[in-house]
Amino acid sequence: MKKLVFISLSLLLLSAVAGAERGQAMYEQLNLTEQQRSEVETLMADHQQRMAAAREQIKAETHEKMANILNEDQMQQWQQLKEEKQQRMKKRMKKMKHKQQHRREHKRLLEDTDNG
Image (tube, rainbow, N blue to C red; front, top):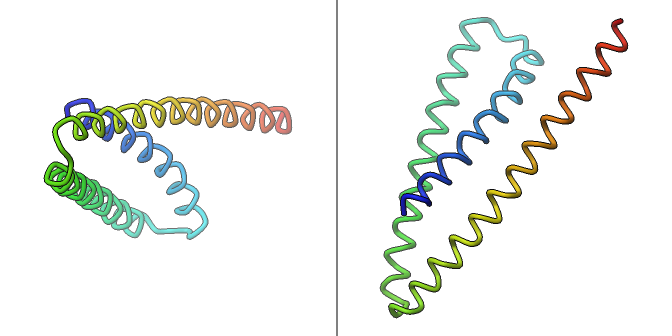
């Protein structure tokens, strides 16, 4: 269970970082005032917290319901399958992060070349 929470929080952090970059673009495109930007950031942070809490609640409810349906062996097997799926997702997220970093570096190099 601790691994599940750790992985969930890690993915949430990666999502937040990617979201912050998209948020920057949105702020610039909307030409927000500082007050508007502050209010939007507060709203979006609250949204992320509420969504994370809702996901955790749904996961807990699903786990409880599965425990009522599956026998002990099936439950252990289900847990193992979930952990394997999370490990695959973690690897994909790591690859995606690396690709995003590479694209940003490439974009900066192109911009520097154009400006230089």
